[in-house]
Image 1 (cartoon, rainbow, N blue to C red):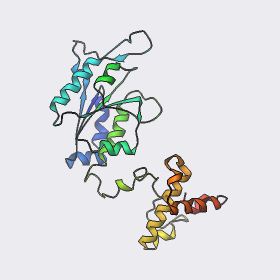
Image 2 (cartoon, rainbow, N blue to C red; image 1 turned 90 degrees about the vertical axis):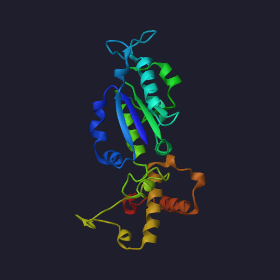
Image 3 (cartoon, one colour; image 1 turned 60 degrees about the horizontal axis):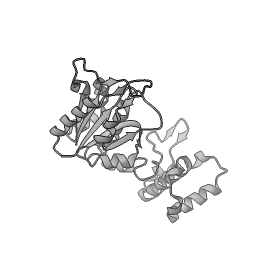
Image 4 (tube, rainbow, N blue to C red; image 1 turned 90 degrees about the horizontal axis):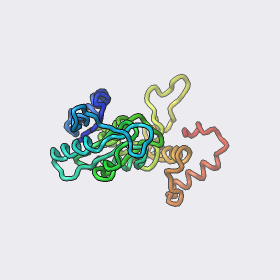
Amino acid sequence: MKIDVLTLFPEMFTGVLGSSILKKAQEKQAVTIHVTNFRTFSDNKHQTVDDYPYGGGAGMVLKPQPIFDAVSHLKRQSTISNPRVILLCPQGEVFNQKKAETLSKEEHLIFICGHYEGYDERIRTHIVTDEISIGDYVLTGGELGAMVVIDSVVRLLEKVLGNHVSAKEDSHTTGRLEYPQYTRPADFRGMKVPDILLSGNHQMIEEWRKMQSFLRTYTRRPDLLDLSCLTEEEQYWMKKFKLENGIDLSLIHI
């Protein structure tokens, strides 16, 4: 995969792209990531990229010319005819795991990171294929949003994670939150690992994990569940939980 990022602050990406999984993914040649300052595409001697909004109002608006030209330049260098052009903005589709999985199948992604008050609308309507928001709040610019999306997408690429099962079992990938995880020691200051995880019975452990994943989703993110489509097993777990609703939830590790 090839990823291009257009930003006014390329230095913001240095630490993120040069560390952890993103660094390893590039070393494994699973992805190439280039960060470009789109100010260099400005066609005036002062390299300005923004201007006052027509009709008045607070703040400055990003001009179309530098971004149009930057995207055109990247498309000419692309090995495919129509790379996805992603605009980070609070008006966009709220990012989730399904979107990450969809984007991970693409060959070339171009991220546009805005700043200031907003974008000239012609950027949105003529060159953008996707508008993405990482939540219902406003950031200073699109850089942090782009980092979130890039990290989420790249970790799904083949051979990036050491264990190929890891990404498949992540919260949200299965439509459920992930089950509780434990590591050594088995008894830490009186807080013990559930006996079933020490049993060595892999079938029972798998069953326990499925139940815990469902109950954690049911109690923390019920909006992720379609209660009309639960399996018989999940219906049983839910009924049992309701019957036990008066007990300490920590006893069933929710």
